[in-house]
Image (cartoon, rainbow, N blue to C red; front, side):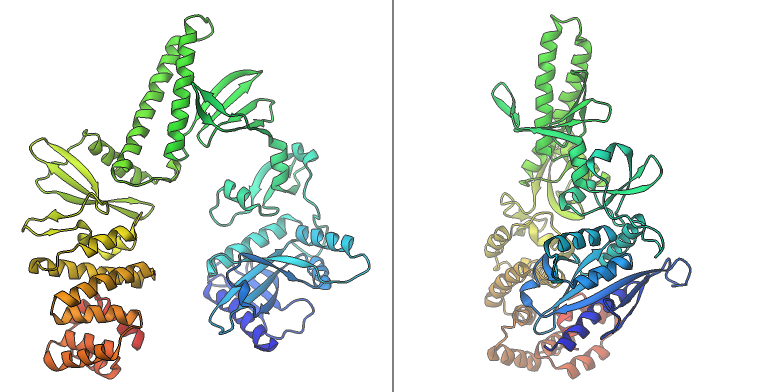
Length: 586
């Protein structure tokens, strides 16, 4: 691919993303002759895109035809030192590099948002290394993570925020060239953080982004601070000595922090910390925010400490025994609850690793109800056994609730568990409960074991005529799952089941379903096309004829049959996964 083509595709990739966002516009031109710049991005206050409050961002766009960078999170790119100087004089710019695949099907956007602080750092570093040269410094280009308009918009907002807080609101006046040092950290009141998208501070620390935090000095001036400075001013050291009681190690290490007022804070985990004033323990702070295992560990540790305090209270005038016992009972109640929480997920055979603080309120209510059932504290007064969906973070855990009318107890099973091999329904058909799960659940499971599902499919009894309809409906849901998620595991399961049915059941719809799986795998052969032609000769059912024509890619016939269908039949047909193949051949 020649350089002109590469540049055209690169500019198109950026302008296409901008075009998709209602608050963005651009004046970026291919083959722009302006030194160091290819144009500007306009950021508007509302969708009307009026002149009021409009902001402009200088940009340069480069293209790169090198497939080895397509899957990288970042790479270094040489930028002309004169361009960097021009960006610095214009108070910043966004530098885009679009990596283009050989067949031009993939275009991945990388970037560096050149703020005054960054540019000053790059220029100083380069001049120090290359006093007598004008070589191009290699600068990191970061991947635009989600490659969508929202990600681009947020990145641009953060860039504008940084420009404005580094004194680059206009071309007049001074700009800030260095972040504040650790020696002056006590002059700062922390107030602002660069985040136009929801983000947790710990995630910012983990990513180690540059200059994302700003403080206000006592003189009212805005000053950027690096996270390294914050850490140096706060954490004294990490104590690597394990903490253990009765030979059980509770913590491998402890973070120790000095607060502004001179107090010491011992941080044992996400949940537990201890405040020490004047060398004496002042308070223990427990917040259930970490994983269930970490909370249980902290509660057991606390209980051991309180047991020790209770024993000492008999010989110490400074320890209030009643208060210790009260706290001990509170910790025991919490420990009972989180033990029941863990027991529930052990019953459901799920290794629950999510942080407790991340569980949504409604999800927690559902979990608590299931905890009561699992502890025999709640009975679902229902004559029939039921399947209930536990929803966590919009993912499903299908749970079978078996009601024992005689003992008035309800028992829980994970529908996807190996314990739930078969279930006999009201008409005496024995089938795995997974067959009752529809596509919206199957494609959005909290946890899925495809090898287990394969075993269940391979054990299905296809000799029972009454169950074929249920099994076929499950097959259609598996195919839909593949279409929705593009997860090939669903298609493999569909192939196993449809092939078994094809060999056992002599029905037109069974053949068509097997063939539509093969079609998705691009494995339809001449013998299959011959069978499809025979089906057209042997049936008068218009939906069967339509499905066969879709697989044969007879576009004209498909359109004609669809035009003859009633509205009700057409809407019903659209719910079948073969309609997806029809849309593909149009």
